[in-house]
Image (cartoon, rainbow, N blue to C red; front, side, top):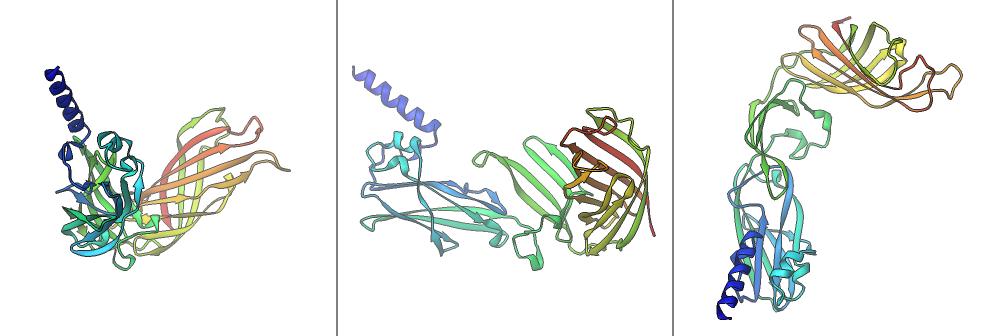
Length: 340
């Protein structure tokens, strides 16, 4: 019988190790505090989590957050943690012991930083834990450390490589600067997080591409769910662009397929590579209406320096259409563009 009790205790200890709760097993402290994220000696950027759990025999009053010795805020407390409740049934409200909040790590200086969390119980007793980690970040200049406009990030001239559990994005354009970015799989957040940002060119010389361009294209590929025989073999697109550093905005026109004044936005790299995306456009293909409607999305990409362009058009048609129209289709036209 005694050996059975010893076996059961060892089994519980092994189970707690498997669930990351073993470091506090068997402790009789009045307060237990476990910081699960940020991980010690890890790398963070952008908006990510601060999370963990806190227990107190007298009940937890609050969990305080300090960054590099300065008080920041009280972290929201009381999240569901049934795993903690099962491990520490003799602590009150152990199943509601989780704390979590989103935090913009890019507000911190690049390099090493220290985060301290302090759990305070209802008797004003306290316990603190510190985590040291590194911050890598983009340098967004006037935009601060949070880039709200997605069009300021452009992957048109970037390349992507991978190895093991890492991804490498080279020549990413963000807010007019060129970066190499490394991402790594992180188990706590269950996604790929940025672990390294390297500024390659802080002030690249952008080509002047503002104005009116005419693209003469021919049908290259089609992926349609119905007869595509009505597709024109050749299309001429014109697009009028405004430029601010690397950012492009303008309109695209093609009267043959009812694209008139379609708004496009995107960016250009120092070498001339560009990408322009449209927003959805509703088109009435019938003569008298309501007829057949389609949500169209157009992407134009290419290289301004060589004049090569690619136009990808996606159609998703709604109501029943005449037989000579396409029900669902992705069409690619390729050709060259010249500036008027």
